[in-house]
Length: 409
Image (cartoon, one colour):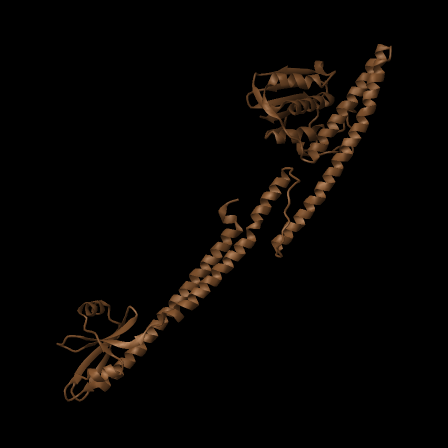
């Protein structure tokens, strides 16, 4: 799963955008509060300077300003830093009507304080510390609490979602045939409810599987016992013809039981492969051996190549394709050939009426009687799924009057 499909990624993105939005709001409020404070301090300083101005001496009464809380800044370095701060866009001009003198003033923030700069033409600026001090604790506490609440909420949501990852891994193990997993949760949220429901389903499915395996084990045992006894009894018959017929019948019954077992395992998705390297000649020889009496109907043109397959199951695949090819061919003959990438079974027969996938479905007869009375009608079902388990592909092609079943290896 790609990262941008993850629910956790989307929730993280939402909370990140929320935190950015909250930060932008608090920053905007901070700027607004600062500007509002500066305007108030500007107005207050203006009134204080007017009341402390001595029109006769044409000077400011600093003692009076001190009484109102103003402090004159004498530190040269601090004065330089304050004067380096850009002036506000609209400094308030103070007019002295009687003396026709102009005082200018503006206020600027610096550190934890606000300073007023008084200036008059041809005179050195005077800097006063305004009687105001920022209260950082109330301004910082609320944003911090808000950020903490959002972050705690995010962590809580992520922690409640994280069990989904564990549940996903448990489901993967369950899909691979591990029925000994447990997903029970003591939490009360929806994910815990889902995990508990899945755990209950696993327990029920495991019980059904165990019951099915017990039933199949018993039924296979009960079916094999009379076959074994019949084979022993056939050995005691003196007439060789009857002995051969009975032995072939019992051998065919054993083959049907093996086919039934494979079908059951394929249906339960429990068929396991033992993949090794084999020469194609050996696999084909095994397929011909289990075909019994149809060797003379099959022509092989083999190119030496190694196959990475389950020897027995892939032999059954070739056997089923060759068996069907012989049964449905007009001349009851089949050709088996291969190259480095494909194995092809060809015969001269009518074209398929439906897609190959339909014929690979179990019990697919479409109301037609099978030409072969042998088997359970699951040949292509087994073939299709075993090829799929090998990571290979089966295709059907029609060329003229010939059918070609091609395994891409």
